[in-house]
Length: 362
Image (cartoon, rainbow, N blue to C red; front, side, top):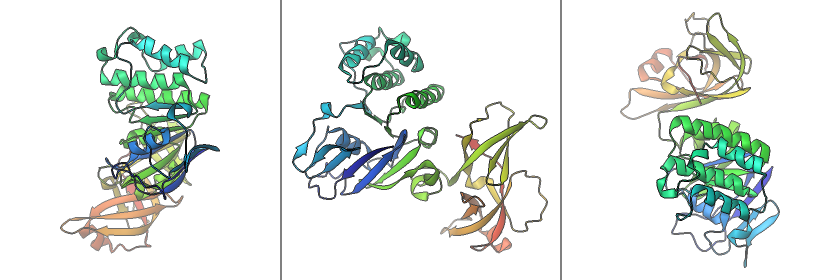
């Protein structure tokens, strides 16, 4: 576990009001994702951490190493950081191979030739080595930039929206390889992302920024049940359910997952089911119905015992948003009509059955 300490509570500069005064310690376990709406200060925070930007009276420490404190300021090049910018930084007069070799020579943590070759293959850039930056697409440039960061092999990785220009298939492969390679390196990675799918597929821990301050910082398992995290993505109300793969029931073409002592069944018609030990499912609130009578027979296989913890009504809307808690303390949201709410006479603390019609797999 690595610790990144940031204290701006006494700072006098605010980077054109993009950063507020705040203090936090980020526990960086493998891959941490920094999320927040545009303008919340994510990129500015990365630039402060790296030393590319400066505010007076800030305190920044990585593990036990002081990077900035009072009158002391460690230059960016001495912090040994692998940085991927939101706008890819490659020397225009060098081709891709020359850019990568220049980075490799500058690295303090030298990598082997075999690992270098593995990185070229993993990020699918072997055919790009003779091209110059102006000949690369935006997605290709990002693949090169990520490989370049791993080649530099800094003590910490700061990646600013490194996947934003990639097509979905490429992005899926790159995410898988970032995780696999980092399992070898055991280095902390802090990634800025605006994508819920990217965040869920990458993160071990999550930090949320709002109005220039870090307002949430915890593990992904805590984040998925916290509206501070889920509300930072522009989308209809949803839940993120953490489940464990159990087995395939081939006779029914279903895959069986478990959370707590209950089971969830997912169609395997397209053969794209993830069989990781731990998986995350996306469940839209509109796809969750509620049964008041627990003995009612229903065709849905996915019925779960829950308790209502909140009922949110909206002005001029036919729907209400109900928050439920499952037996294993996970949060589940359901969107039903106000008429259904009155018909079922639902109240906070009622014990009900939640019926899940459809799930999406992250």
